[in-house]
Image (cartoon, rainbow, N blue to C red):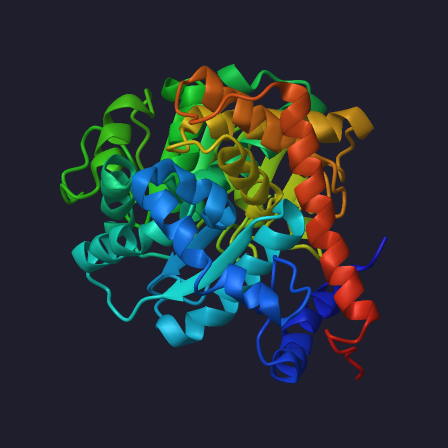
Amino acid sequence: MLTKEQLLEKSKKPSADALKMHPFFKGKIMSTLKCAVRDFDDFAIWYTPGVAAACRDIEAHPEKVFEHTNKANMVAVVSDGTRVLGLGDIGPEAAIPVMEGKAILFKYLGGVDAWPICLDTKDAEEIIKTVKLISPCFGGINLEDLSQPKCFHILDTLRKEAKIPVWHDDQQGTAAVTLAGLINAFKIVKKNIKDARITLIGSGAANVACARVMLAYGVNPAKLIMVDSKGTLHKGRTDIPPDYKEKLRFCQITNAEQRKGNIAEAMEGADAVVALAKSGPDVIKKEWVKKMAKDAIMFACANPIPEIYPWEAEEAGAKVVATGRSDFPNQVNNSLCFPAIFRGTLDVMATTITDEMCIESAMELAKCAEDKGLKKDYLLPKMDEWEVFPRQAVKVGLKAIEQKVARIKLPKEKLMEIAEAKIRKARMETTILMEKGIIAGYKE
């Protein structure tokens, strides 16, 4: 077990390495061919004149776009760079490295082809219009790092009006992996999640979605307390703008005690805290953790620094601690869910991604860890446990079929075969490119 000092020093290394390796590779993704080029005569098939036959077939039968093109496996990662992970409004150009990173995760973990689309506008209506205009090329849209409250309006509008699945990973993705982590954390401490006192610190897009998905899963809203920058949400709050519709709803249905105050008051007696607030440390103090319930659960998930360091939460009495970082135990990371959710969505050509599909993903992710043996420092699988992604994809696809939002129906065995093949292929491609030197080896 590393010391506090060693963990702190280790936490600085990824940033230092990033400044060396990003310029070396000059970006993280590229396009490559999917079709065979046996000789130059093949260009007459893939381009003019042969391609016209495929175009006419799609014109006559629009659904055949999924057969003739890569649309069924192509996702756009769309952002305006206004709320980039822990960095805030840094603009579309500065957001590109994050969106390219997202595309890597889509491909390597889920076998999904993804491309960053960073928009030079902050206007919600322009973003909505742009997404709808580019939709013909894509099988799905992943909204990323959009500021609130417009992110709610953008997602709600596009889910109603777009012809392809649109989701906001900071909302549904965070909610799915957080729910998975909580399911297992409550098993470890031997408490019932559906009757627990849970405090959510921060009421941005992530925790609003967490609350919504938790309630859909069966968490008791009366025992849920949310905290924003001005204090707890309760029926007496009159300062919340009408654009924040879900926050206003939570003022009415959560916090049955009508507890008022700030983080300290909201945490008192809580069985679990999910913090998705501002980067720490010391956003959450040890003395507040001490006043939580016995065998407390602490998810301090702000990036790049958690609201409280894990060792401090443990010293204060928390039994299970998780963060959003890969270099600390128990990483609660969207990357464990979103590639699989899109894999399952695309494999049945679903028209939307419902909260119920996300809950299926969360339950299967939790089950994957449970199958290997839950421990206080093994709450969720690691990203290198590749089997968790096809397992989730199958559950998501089956739920889409059950909810009648899938264009095609496939049995469980076929869905597993498809998901496994596509994910294996993506990893194999990367390995071969590295072995052949096409992806250059990096040396210090």
